[in-house]
Image: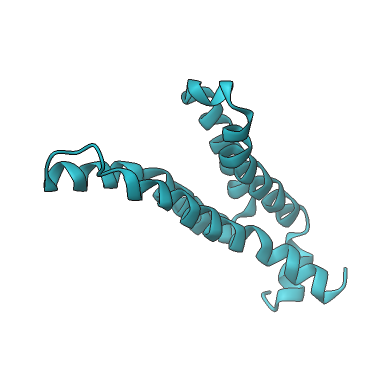
Length: 125
């Protein structure tokens, strides 16, 4: 594998995860619209930031152990479909939320399969 492809494969799931987390964080911006006070608004915002926090915590582990990212991002995509029943009626919701999680999981799976080669190309031993 050449260096450019190796670096792209190494960085793609990491950068996509950060972009996905920022996208999910946008949903927290409207959390305060139906709240009646400051503390209720803060609580609603924090609850809406839980998926973002979860995605970023998985990234911390997946950065070193790619198999964790492969497993947990795919699980997060499935969990959204299973635990949020309205999503099952909207393919666009599934593609928007679960789709990136599945893609990131697959990219971390490739990272895991090519772990030694990617680390060597990326300068880690």
